[in-house]
Image 1 (tube, rainbow, N blue to C red):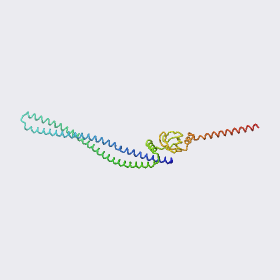
Image 2 (cartoon, rainbow, N blue to C red):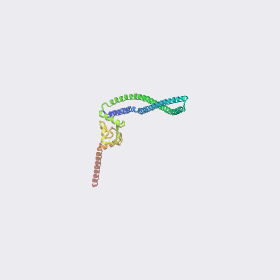
Image 3 (spheres, helix red, strand yellow):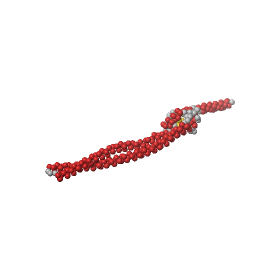
Image 4 (tube, one colour):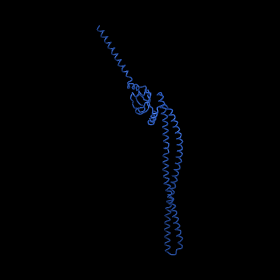
Length: 283
């Protein structure tokens, strides 16, 4: 497999994998979109239990007060009716005392009943509000869950489609390379293959050894950056960086030899010329 074809397939795999990773993340996040509402619903249900307990306590208290008031009023009426049949001052005094005490108790019960009736009315409204909130939250959460199920189904289908395409794209590439490449993409924000420009990895901006860069440029196998672990390929920049790679790796050493040889020849020619001039002068 040609390296250019291999790199192109890795780039395609990178795009597919980036999309799949993003969708899988959305799938994981979907339940969280209703987590806040479910928490509100849980609190509302707990509050509703407390409000219902208060409502039931107040209802029982109001019922009891009404019973006591009815007994007190009945006792008072009976005592008033007996006033016509009394025969002595002593009986009158005792009966009048009962009527007075019953009247005071009636007034007290009526005031207490009025207060508790108001509390019961308030508790009834609070309970109704809590039940309304719970009902609306349950309906909204149910609708949202249905939408989530629909969205999730479409996402899962797309993930399966991407996996199949990934399998086709990476067919023939070493499995260990594919596994490592996928891990790199997941940890490096979706970028797993980058060019070397001059002597610098464009993924992490680290300067690479010149000999290593030449290996990347000339290699027929996958090479990983020693610093960021991304897959590297060489990108001709057409500037001095490319020359520097050759110089630093020693591939232009012959130029130095050539330069030295030229200097020697020029020096020899000069010496011959000087000798000739000396001979002429002697003659």
